[in-house]
Length: 129
Image 1 (cartoon, rainbow, N blue to C red):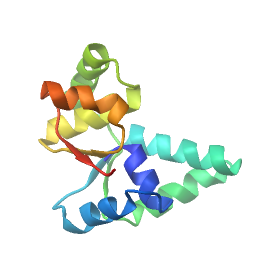
Image 2: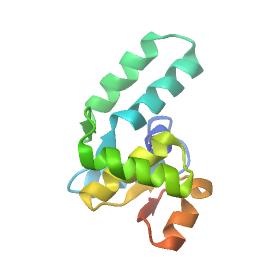
Image 3: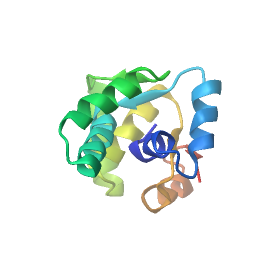
Image 4: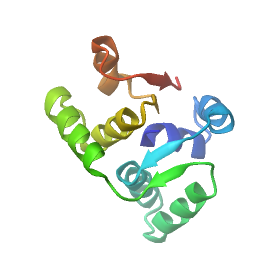
């Protein structure tokens, strides 16, 4: 899952129902620590309170999501490839890399970042909106 999908769910934005269905139906839902950092950063930016980062991490840890706190060699090298080849953001490169290493799609709403990758067959996606 990338950050925008989980932010949509946490804020009850359009697409949150798709994320809720993924959380209920998927055998496993995974997120990279880099994408979790994006969510924590967004919470701090919105609230102006640095404690919001801890609060949002606590909320995410109560969801049926496996947080990848460490970046293994495979994810690292896949992320470098995605960042270099497709010029995506660093966090999106990690979402793509984790998904590739797990053979899974990425839940997202970031069409502007990912439509080209889908067209190229470089990754699979669950579009939340």
